[in-house]
Image (cartoon, rainbow, N blue to C red; front, side, top):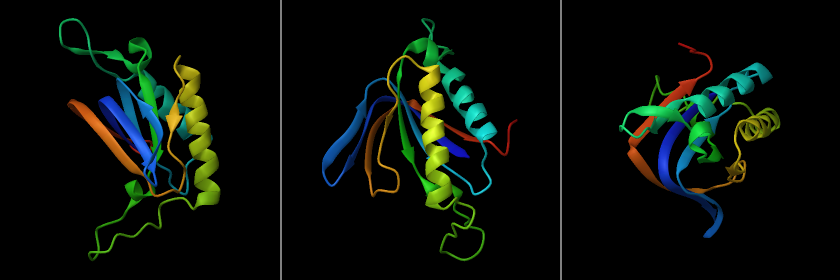
Amino acid sequence: MRAVIQRVVNASVSIDGMIMARINTGLLILLGVADDDKKEDVIWLSSKIANLRIFDDDKGVMNISLKEHNGEALVVSQFTLHALTKKGNRPSYIKAAPPEIALPIYNQFVEQMQSHLESPVKTGAFGANMKVILSNDGPATFIIDTKNRE
């Protein structure tokens, strides 16, 4: 799994001009599921994100997690995070899981994130053409790949 995590002041996702979900201070999580991702990846990644100390404390130091901050989370599926761009100019998506594999894992991730947080985890619509609007706070953007747990 790959996640692009953006600390936001606010974020929303809309489909066909209708806002499907909106959050205030928290994290926008763009999530890509690979064809070989497992439940262990879901558990590890959700815990890592919920406990990642990327919100400022009273001294302006990134020292507070989303969980401690009581922030909100918006999870948006994004298969393009697994694009292979080494050859040619047209990305290949052969590493991205097909919908029948990705959707259950995506749903497990949302449920796991919810188990870490007090406020409801919000989502877009899996597989839909979505418009995401965000006000990045910092900007602070982080990339985590479960295949590279350094």
